[in-house]
Amino acid sequence: MSVARLSTEDNDRESKRSKKGTSPVLRFSDEDKIGTIQSHDNALVVTLRIGGFDVKRVLVDQGSVVEVMYTDLYKGLNLKPEDLTAYDSPLVSFEGKTVTPRGQIGLPIQTGSNVVEVDFIVVDTYLPYTAIVARPWLHALGAISSTLHQKVKYPSEGRVEEIVGNQAMARQCMVAAISRQSNAESLASIQKDL
Picture 1 (cartoon, rainbow, N blue to C red):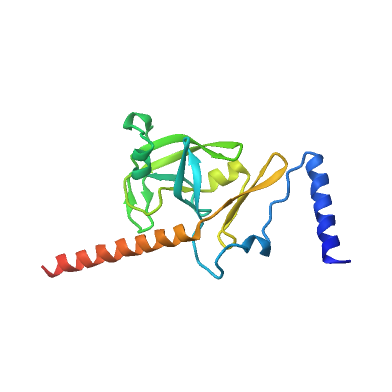
Picture 2 (tube, rainbow, N blue to C red; picture 1 turned 90 degrees about the vertical axis):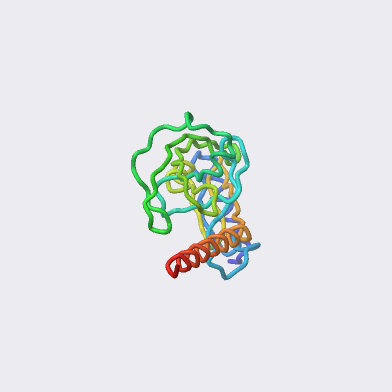
């Protein structure tokens, strides 16, 4: 059996599954790496339509249980303090510090024709990302993500749709975070010496 024949049979099976009303199979292959710089350690950073605006520098984090919005985005979306509802649980930042959220806000995230309402925790701290989307968003969308392949795949109307990560943006975010940490450490060292 040739490879082309096997591929055609796989497509026929997937097409039949879609006709029966089942969800398409979400998977990644080496073909999904085409267009990415390999080998890499990049985070998965994407652009998403949040609250009706295209928002860049959104980190997709499978390890997080809450969606987070940083104040720069909150202000950029022209949201007001009265738009927030109370959120009392403190969060732990990437730096290990406890962060008290300003509140919580529900906003839609649109991917293609799919819209998922997400509860963002708004925090007033620095991170080079504008927001973090996490497992609740991925699960509501029925999506899977892969940092290796730099993609999020999700079912939509019997097809597999994808959101492609931006490696250049991911690297810029990493450099900004490292630079900020280095500057903070240098400042702390100078103040200690005074």
